Image (cartoon, rainbow, N blue to C red; front, side, top):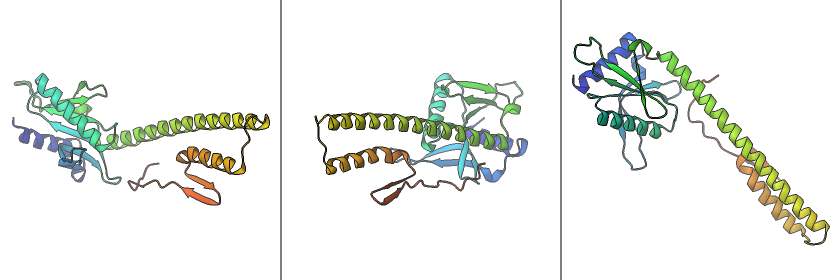
Length: 220
């Protein structure tokens, strides 16, 4: 079976058997550009058009021989990096072994780069992919917020220690600070904290960090 024929078979399986909306199935989906300026194409991509996000990538391969398999896995992992989403599910479809009676074979690419065979009946529904993408994205955002908060705490503690040291030196007359030096020290401390803050007011000026809204999100 040629790859183009198998690709058509996979498309029909998703659209007819798994009831994926045809409008959410992108054939030869363009990805990129990458750092090398090139644009790449995935055989099939599943889209959540309400958020303008790809929620699964599929490659169709004619051979499952070890070298070809590793190349296909690397290809999908590269595509996922282009999307900038570390949690997009990746799947490989292969022709069935002769005489097996199967429509095709399916392998899911695991986080460690290995694969896991799944039955066609186990392939996730469209709604399951959307739900999984949203919950994983939310979990990733929660971890990122927690990490930022931890770094903010460490930064504040370090600044407090530095301020305390300067205060002790000033009280003991070892180091005398002028108003200008204190002002510059305050500005330096504020600049350390500014990257963590959505809003920050200093010297009568309010700074607000702009966060681009990449999608019109319908997330709960």
